[in-house]
Image (cartoon, rainbow, N blue to C red; front, side, top):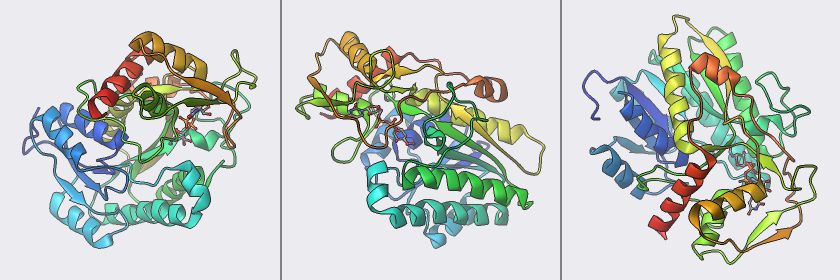
Length: 343
Ligand code: WQD
């Protein structure tokens, strides 16, 4: 699918990242023309090569940080985009605890710059990358969008909660923006072509890339962070969603905004599978799907981990007409295929 002159242009900030790059593919497949801006602080130029292989053409990319007002202004002047999907943010939970100002400065200033430039150039559609981390450890499960947000467990998580409030308050001040904040659960997997996937910098913090690197012999042993939680097998529960399902949710959100006659609007939507899986079940499913035995040990709990969180996805079904279609097994097979490709 190659964009035409009539394909609506969408600015994808952080479009060379894990979720961003998969969303770029889904946008083209849906008839949009994505324009990427990315500083490559958490990505590699090889992602653009992977996108070219999948799509059969180059995707325009500006190499810049989203706090660079001159470049952002140039993009809005030159590209006449019809919407923005804002992924660009620092997202390492542990680093955010060590360097909070880096996270508040980068994640919040870039959002505020976008919110100033969009109405200036008549761009009203915004899809924002938020996170289930805003729920903390919820009292009730599954979490709905009305589940109260709890104090963030990290400065990273706090930037997501504050960002939601900045967008909401800006729109309540009659700035002509229609925005949907998508609260992701745990994105995993890779594009089935194995041309793009997750590229964690250094030692992976997240479970599935640590699993695939252990299976590939890059890591000696996987540690399961605690098996004394109040769950069926004692390990934490999360809602693991295939990254392509997540990417497709962004396209649906954009379509919803584009169809809306409203001058301004704001809403939040959970994007997950609606299923909770324990860490041990992820490990067992990976072994069953790939035939690879994982060397793992049970270690102490990881500070800051919530015991269990998974989504009520009825609003995404009703408002976006979207539901996750890919199974846990498919997600883990795609993650493994990608790991084998890059190892
Ligand atoms: C999942 C489970 C760990 C690694 C993070 C961010 C969150 C969001 C999604 C961006 C937990 C366990 C992990 C390991 C393990 N990102 N685990 N051994 O913490 O749920 O969420 O990614 O929005 O903001 O915090 O994901 O993959 O790190 O952990 O046992 O080597 O796997 O304890 O229970 P998490 P995760």
